[in-house]
Length: 264
Length: 284
Image 1 (cartoon, chains in turn blue, purple):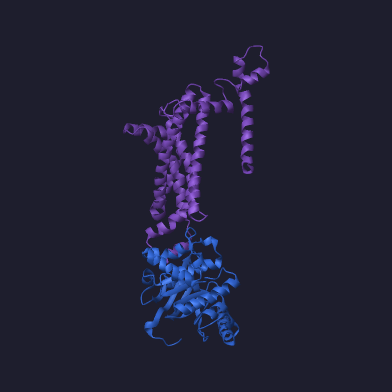
Image 2 (spheres, rainbow over the protein chains, first blue to last red):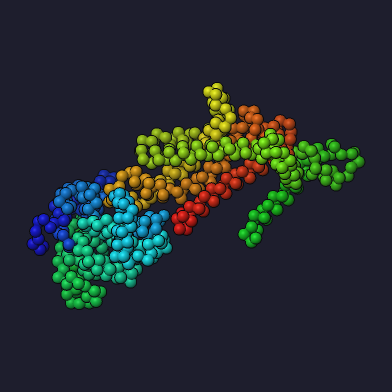
């Protein structure tokens, strides 16, 4: 792990664990997670189904509570961070409200925060421009393709200038061509905003392409098996996926995934 | 025309069956009035134009409707429009009461767990009581308290029609999916905001079908409430008077009028739905 000033730590997890109890069975969803995420990083959580990567993201978002360990988000508890709207969250599905137009969907968090009409319009225009949907602002979600819907949901997460962007397999339901386009788009978005991002995926290519650091997880029990730093240049395009350095990082991730799977 | 064809087919069949049924049902009465040497075709023809037939023909009912609708000023107690208006008015007030009560109950049930368990069995029980049994009691009790006229009728109409509204709205207010609700949580939205921006707009798709069920029920409630009270006006009073004096034509005319009112009510719900769908860009 790179040496970074403590002040720059955005997420700090120590001994984090989640245990469910159902029908007398104890299920360990996540155990003993130590992780620090620093300002401006793009960190991917990758692993097979059931490895707790989504659970970890939901802990950070305070959508779920840990059973053990400590978690600091932005120097406070996850709950306080949520209450201060420290993060924007992108779900697996766009989760747009079908009765709202695109611009009103993006304005939703701003309405809840009580921003003035003019301020809302200004910010909505800005983020829709950022994701390239300015021309579609009057459309309803069902009038747009899946990829456009997910872009809108990213715009919505960015609209209130959060300090942290949390994404839970946002491109999981999309076809590969759309995925490629969105992955590149997300990379450029991250480059231009410098927003600290945590990205859950089960695609090695996506993780390596987007990340500065890749957290490899394994299941039964869900845990972190390796943290791999990526030495790829910050400026990336889709062709980089054929470069030897990219393949080397991808290989390291795959090896860690296999290893995690082997000793499970 | 093409999409009206099935409806016209059914209408034709109904009319044929209706005419066909009138002959045997009115036969005895028609033969009683006929000369002794009348042949069967004379009697058969007579079955279709009796004054107080057991089953009046569609033409008789239609002409009775037209006569009772247009031959009197609408303020006259002999006018069918007057009676329909009286019933429609109490049904409408009852429906509005049902909307407020049904939605308020649904909001309570959705937000307060105890209410869910405490109220639901009573709501179901309330619908198991025959409205014909409870209507006279409601009218008498309220009459004792000085409430007469439209109030007891509207209350009974509301009683009968709030249930589909409340059950539909409970389902509607719970219809948003987990992600849509989690999203609100990430914004730290208050439950009032979750209600206004998520639960309520999501429930509207469930409100309209519920209203379509409730609107005819409100009419039934209003008519039933007019039956036991010796009410002076309304379709219920008209039905009651008709059966007292053997005026089958009057009964049938009132029944058809009730059916038309129900269709009109459902059509109004449909129109408001269309307007909302338009405002939402083409989908509910």
